[in-house]
Picture 1 (cartoon, rainbow, N blue to C red):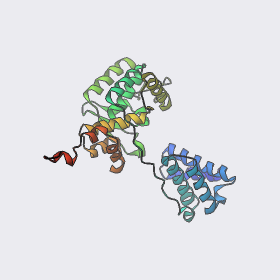
Picture 2: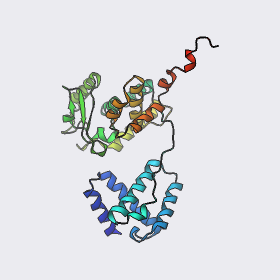
Picture 3: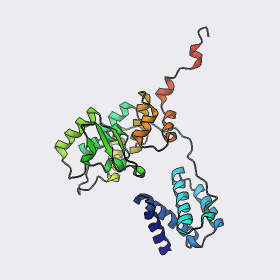
Picture 4: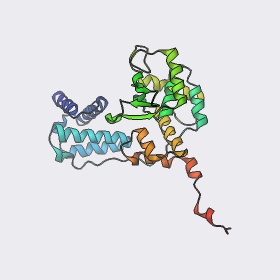
Length: 279
């Protein structure tokens, strides 16, 4: 089993997979081995079908199940060279649910509740730019291009670099933060050890602030990203511009924000409003 995992990890590195993806795929392979009590190399399609059915019954999100399926496909098709054994695998879909969005008033309450200035500026930046948590944690001072009014996102998901806006208000906030904080190079936000800001520490700070602000919905960094996109949409920003800002590969991913913008829906005129003589 150890030899198989070692080979799989080597294949993942050769394939250019990110460190977090490699770790997730290897963990999925270990889960499969523990479930059946033997190496995946000794399993056949019937055993894999049992495992897939088990995953479906665990109440995992569509994203987690897709990750497991992708790990299985990689393990058997690339490392073991047995493509036919995973030919039956589908692609689990997420249930269609409305994503909560914070109002602008809630955003202000949340940011005020962040008592440590570093975290207040950090999460202000997340809402102002729509960055993912990890992308923001890995920002360097060189990524702030004040002359062009953009932020260069180098550590983007999937290795797809992009630019996001750097508004005048955010730039002023960052400059004021820099004068007082002076984080160690090259980081824009750093941990107490001088390394890049720890994502889980930042997440905990946001959780404490959300509790103090007593907001009605569970608050996560992703919710700030959802709110950023929805508020842009409500202001009339073209959805393809939002797609680029969020770093989405497909416009279909961005289009889900059209389902959560209550203001946009409420402001859309019904055809009945055009009937002059009714009622």
